[in-house]
Image 1 (cartoon, rainbow, N blue to C red):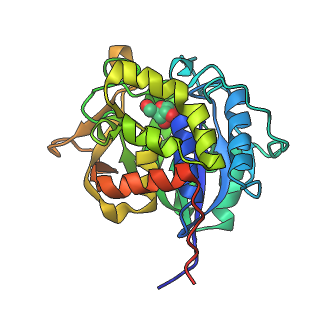
Image 2 (tube, helix red, strand yellow):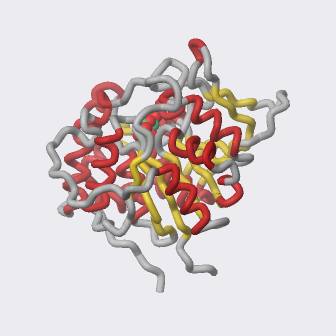
Length: 317
Ligand code: RIB
Ligand code: CA
């Protein structure tokens, strides 16, 4: 068995659920996080970059370079999700800024450079709007040839949205970027909002993990407290972490039940940002999206627990 870790590049808009997903990646011995490329989304780029740097500092991963990307969607301005994540994106708990700064290289350029450095092996996971990846594709249309696998947290495959009645936040924030990315990659993996809703975790369980006596648990308890209270009030006794599910799918796809269908994003009108799936294969579009239907819930929760507690990586001998 090849024990060389899989190089993993995460494009992200941290964001409380992004933070959990990134901690899951840090805790996984089979993957090596080679960078965080950051976009605006949940909150503005200044906050998402600061949050990415802070997360690396808390997790002891200041070896991971952070690259600032696009501050706005490609064409049209969109609302953020500060009501969910806090104005600063990390629960408004007044965290001291990280000592480190982001790299000078733009995220889109870093995506291209790292795709060459790890050509054919790079796992690219997108946890936010797809603006950086779309810009990278405009700069270098050959990018998909060097990406081993693209996993995106995006969309609502049956139109059950979370930012409009029909559209999920990441797709809605920059649907033109999603259109470019979905059209450029012949195959990609999708963890959507409806799959997220089907994989909720009991608040009581998350509270227990966050009460652990570890620095990482205390950090995650602090940044997630606001959004967990918001979710408890609005969505009941289960918490839903979209990016954590997407990262679990990325880290261990063999634990997922999937179906491949043609998926595209609507750009106009009331359905703007809606992800349309040809479930019956009646259209002419190729089946480009491997859609997550079910993931092993127990293993999902094990990954989340390990990430929150900050248990060390188990490095196989
Ligand atoms: O709709 C959920 C997605 O939007 C998650 O990635 C969350 O972090 C926000 O970016
Ligand atoms: Ca996100």
